[in-house]
Length: 233
Image (cartoon, rainbow, N blue to C red):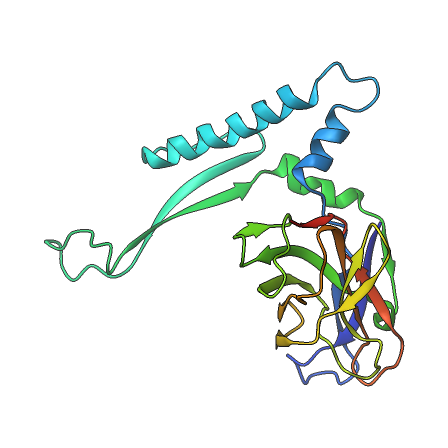
């Protein structure tokens, strides 16, 4: 099921009542979820071997790209393009002025799956924050470590803290004691990015992150939970 909501169309003045749609609350699966689905009950495949095959598939494609070779199968194809202007026919590629780009094109065998999606409209006021990635600057890791006193960058959707309620904010919830610690210093407060200082009071152990906010000029609190458990060492 794909949820979507309607919002005002600010790109056109032809009809003041027309709207645009956007997907909301879209679940994001990781490679671990993929492997679990592939190797679930009834499968003869093992998680370790399956991950090795997937990793080797993509690393081999990356090797082709390094050699300047394209790749094509029934799922994807890769193409090259070169950006930048060449001043004349005698001009040659200069990394300072030109850039090689690789484009990954998804084939119909994948994109045709959208025709099977069931859609359901939802009230935009019911939209919850969606946390996709947590980057800890202290350890230089994604979705693993929390370094108290250092900088944390959270990316996702619908995460802006509106400050309509005292209960809004970024909260760290201990998985050992269920203690909650609120981040008091948020530098970047945007729908897709929250940059903040991790509270120094976090004790060693497992923690989860929750973003709690409201919509614009609304006092209905929504909570977005980041599923992975993070560790304070």
